[in-house]
Amino acid sequence: MAKPLTPEQINALTLATKNVDRLTRLQVFTLATSGLIDVSEGKFVVTPKAERALARHLRTANLEQNVPVVLNAALEVLNTPDAMCNHRQIWEAAGRDQFERDDVLDALRVLREEGILETVKLSGNNFQIFWRRGAAAPALPQPAEQPPEAIEVPEVSEVPEA
Image 1: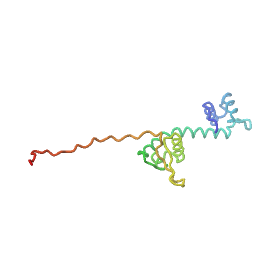
Image 2: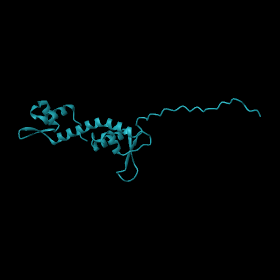
Image 3: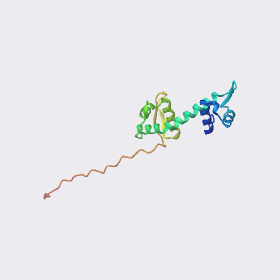
Image 4: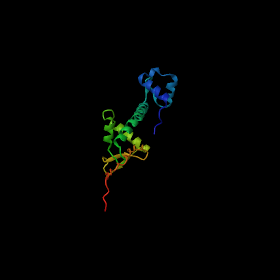
């Protein structure tokens, strides 16, 4: 697994993608020793490794923002202990126009790793994978208990004699 970028590297790479000539000597040294910047035809250029690292950083940042939204949508859909659904129902609850399918699936996988959700495969078909609440999911709110209804006893005005 690739090493995550440091905040200094992220700032320097962001600046380098806009205007490489504005980098300081320290930023050039930091990026060059990491293999994130190179010299081509007498000019500094961002390497493909740097482009991949920035893309990976953006995916991670997006995932951190998506997980809470997908969690709320999943818990809304899975509102009973026995409830199961497919990823599409959670995707639609989270906002199908706001998220890509892969973004929702990545967030669901993170929630599965945390134990909040779990997958159930009912057959050998990979298209029949369902999601349900996991052991680490927040407890469902208990329904308020209704007091037992009072039984009406008819009033007896006279007791018959035997």
